[in-house]
Length: 113
Image 1 (cartoon, one colour):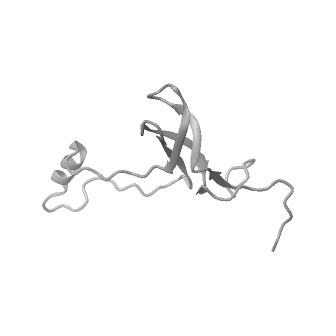
Image 2 (image 1 turned 60 degrees about the vertical axis):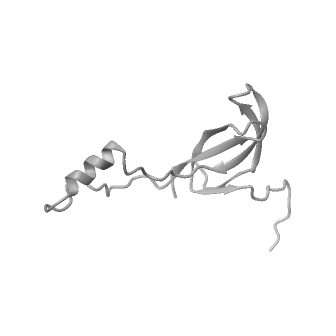
């Protein structure tokens, strides 16, 4: 299943990370969260144009995309500096299963049922 040569596995990322703060220019602790899509603005030009075109009779005026090819999405991480509260985003590779702050795998751990 999926792309040949790439094993399907869970991506587990800790809730805190020590990384570069772009505002301070030094490494600090950051809180990690998964970035979410923002609320769409009704005043954006594209939305106003689309709504104007849709008015009245004539049905759906613009094509609705159905031929979805991708099975995964690129994971966006939202990093917040604990010192200066500066926020920035980092992209992670594509993955099917993403976990934030899950339990770490132990090396040479016995499989328990």
